[in-house]
Length: 212
Ligand SMILES: *[C@@H]1O[C@H](CO)[C@@H](O)[C@H](O)[C@H]1NC(C)=O
Image (tube, rainbow, N blue to C red; front, side, top):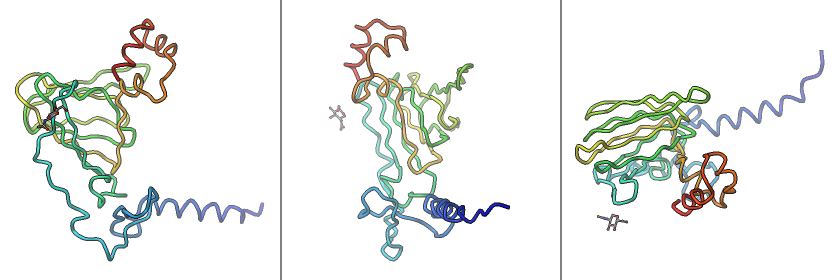
C-alpha cells in the first residue's frame, strides 16, 4: 500500500479551518474582535459583555423616501458582533405603499420572512431553464420562505405602510440587487454585453447605467 503520510498535514489543515469557520464546535461564541482588522480572530472571551449580544432600535421605521420606496435595516454580524460564526441574522424591512424591495439574492442564506403590518406581494424565481415564478400576497402574520441563492422581491400593494421581519441563515448573508449589480457595477460591464444580454439598444443601456 502506498505511503499516505504526506496527506496528514493536509488533513490537519482542513480540520483546523473547519474549527475556525464553526467556532461553536469548540467554544460557546466568537464575538467579532473590533481590533482584528478583517481576520477571523474572536474577541477575548474574558472581555465579552452582554452588550456584544445586544442591539436596540428595531422598532424605528426605516426611511422609505427613496426611488424604490423601501428600506432594509440589517442586524448582521457587522451590526451585532455576538452573531459572528452563529449562522443566523435578521433584518427589518419597511416598504411604503406601492414601494418595492427590488429583485435581489442572498448568496449565503435562506430567508424566512413574516409580515408585521400591511400587505405585501412577494415572490422568487427558480434556476434555469424553468425559471418558475412562485408568488403570493401576504397579510399580517403570514410567513414565506425564499430559498438560498434565488432571486426574490417584495412589493407593497397599497394598504398602508408595510413592515416585515426577515430572518436569514447566515450572520453575513450578503445581498446582490440584480439591477444595481448588472447596471451599476464598478467598473462598468461593457455596454455591448448588456445590449445582447437584455436585448436593449445602446442608448437604453447607457440610460440604465446612469440610473444605477
Ligand atoms: C428620509 O430620506 C430623505 C431622502 O434622503 C431625506 O430628505 C429625509 O430628510 C429623510 N427623513 C428622515 C425623517 O430622516
